Amino acid sequence: MRITTKFGGEIDVDDQQKLFFPKGLFGFEHCTGFVLFDAERSPFYYFQSLDDKDLCFILIDPFLFRPDYEANITQEEMDVIGMREPEQAVVFAIVTIPSNDGAITANLQGPLVINKATKQGCQVVLTDPRWKIKHDIIAELHTEIRQEDR
Image 1 (cartoon, rainbow, N blue to C red):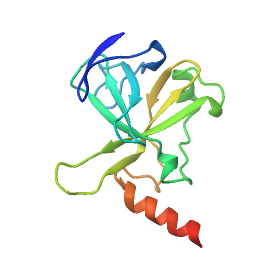
Image 2: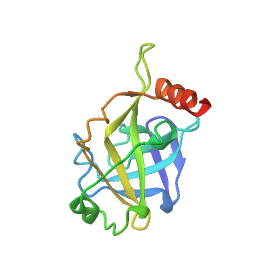
Image 3: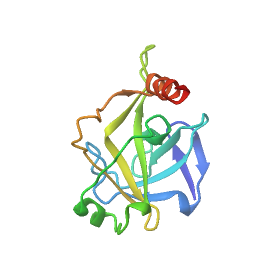
Image 4: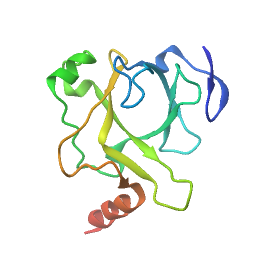
């Protein structure tokens, strides 16, 4: 399938890359169809809306810089995406890249949880006080590396 993307113009995507978010994302409830594909720079991904070509998020695997991350979701949230076992989940955090020279951050309070089996996902709000909407990816990665050196 050929789609128009915010960052890459027209590209071909495979049906395996298509994801359905029954409730959309917070603030973008009208957008339920997305595709996930690699960004130009690893370890980032593009999460392009199929409903609005101008809506595209940058995602990252939060476990890359926070191995202690826990995205505990409710049974109700699991039911929405047809997930029976936590092992079926893939978790991503939405990245913010500021236009100035500020820190690149990830939202660990509102992760995206995707059921690998059904290709359905949802955005959840975690109540654990460790997880904020702005985690400095580079600073936390350096902290993790320093801890590993001990």
